Every structure is written in C-alpha cells, then in structure tokens.
Image (cartoon, rainbow, N blue to C red; front, side, top):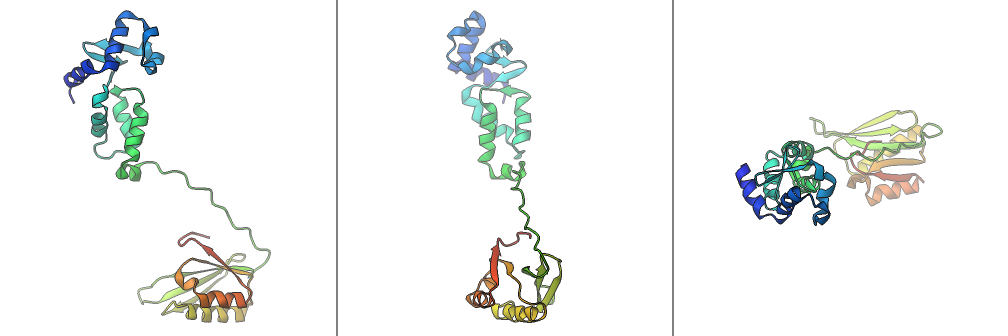
Length: 220
C-alpha cells in the first residue's frame, strides 16, 4: 500500500480532515472525535497525511485492508501488532487486530494459549488398597492390551495381558485381583464404554466398590 493511496483516502475521511483542520487552528475544544484528544500533542500533518509521531494515521476505508496485509502468513496476534505498530496507527487499532486474529483459526493455533486451570490433586489415602485406578495401555504390536491397575497410596501396579477388552474380561481380572489383595473402597476409570457397561457397574456395586469416572486421557 502506497502513501499516495493513503493520502487520497485521507482527503475523503471526515475524521482525518477534522484533525487536519484542528492542527491548523488549535481549537481542540471543537473536536468531535474525542479519541484524539489524549494524543493531540503527538499529532502532525504532512501534505494530506496525519501522523502520530512517525506513524501514519490510517483512514477508515483502508483499515480492514491494512489488517489483511499485516495478517499475511498468519503471524499471530503479538507479531501482527508489532508489524503494524511500527508504521501505522488509528484509534482502537489493537482491539481491531485482536478481533481479526480471534476470527482466524490459524492465528489461534500459533497464538499464546491460555493457562490451564490449576490441577487439583487427589488426597492421599490413609492406607494401601483403599483407592485404585484402572486403565488400558495398547494395543501392543502383538495385538494385546494391558489392563493396568494402580494403588493410589503405594503406587503398586498390577498388570493383566488381554487379547480382548470386553467388560467380561475386565470383571474376570478384577475378581482375580480382589481375591489376592482384598476389596478396595473405590476404583477410578475413564468413561470408555468397556469400563461403563451395565455388567461391570453391577459387579462393582455388588462388591460395594464405588466406581469413579474421569475424562479419557486425563492424568491421575
């Protein structure tokens, strides 16, 4: 975009023509565009251009096109602001850049992500084998899956190798596990279908074991 084009559009812009006039008369009490008042001592004119310091004030008709030019390559919000701030300015430019980037999916990917919610840690049980966690690892190259059960207190791990991961197979593993170590107070799994079948929930209820669900892939 050339300065001659910006000059041409500035001549048509009522906002900038008013500022040009006020720079000559110094009668700022007559200004209708109040957003220029806090920076009036930074403003000057050069032919048909209005400048804030060394930066060109962009007329309204060109602002969207300027945003598109500064957005080339999807640089993200921070870099886009740096690009445009070095040479250009208009009232509310930062907000316009933020809105432009928020509407662009690619910019959201490269932009700074929001901080996640603080992790809430589970309270340590009072003794071993009160509260357990169960999940699957696999499938392995052999096609098998590993049913992994961890004790929250001791971090003791029990592993069962399964060809199929049906609810019936899980119940069989739990029966063998509880026969050796006893019944826990609760067991935590994700909400996958094989952990939430009617048969499995009925078995755990019969054993008076609380079944707790978490979001899949969420760490303990």
